[in-house]
Length: 397
Image (tube, rainbow, N blue to C red; front, side, top):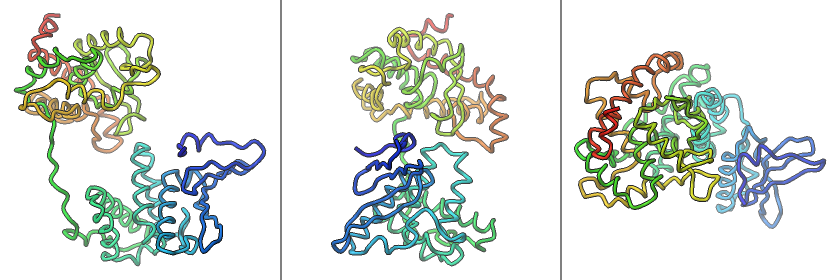
């Protein structure tokens, strides 16, 4: 069974060395002293050999897997991976890999863990094998283009774009720390394929909200799913924010979602309207003693990632509403609130838990816009209620 990061962190020795296998020859070697090192066993020219990829957690599980794949590619090409320099997480002070890791470490505290892992994994998989050992000042634009075109050839145009941005940030960091004099990534403008224009599908149009509620009232599946969809509409939260929501996070008129579950990496306060609290009360009656706001059928876990969107599919919506997604309901809220002209753009962005400005400004606005967001969400819930023939009584409270 493949390893997990939690298993790597928890691994301990009992007086003797231990090996935790991840597959493909890769394993975490836990020494009697407690130190942990990534290793990979392989055969080359009929001989058993071992690679060392560096210590955990400095070299993450994702890093080690990417290095394993690099080694397997080398073997497929008839090259001994041990002959390839720079395969560990270490490197010269001015090498691209060393500077990229230094830059990454400086940014990591401001990113959510999943994003930080993705950024580093892209470097390990697609950049370090070709440019990791090179002095950052010696790397020219054509070499960067060659690396990016390999990614582009996989059809991963979005990854190509993000990798180019991250490489540019590394070069600018190298300039700021006196290890380079210019950013060659800037010379690649127009050299790569343009990503296809994003089509923002799945938004529920304001004119269709009433019809959507009529179909939702006739939803043939679990009542909990219908309530969860309606709660998403009133609160404008993301699917996973509700999926993993716990009753302990609800405090009166506020739902405090912890930073580790948020894309922006900070606590998110969701003002709860009277309509939202009515929906939560019915969800609580269904959830019973479960810690989850929307528990799954098997207990102990929340509903699955696809429960709500599959619920929308089951509603047999007319063609005018085809393609509506749960995430698109956030766009419905954003568009309607912005077009009303009643609310500041920042309060709407904060309601959507989008990243805004620097940390100092963010800290100030976190409190400064809460009162406005309470009024905004109450307005939004009342707006939805006027469209919902099954919930008009809420306006009379």
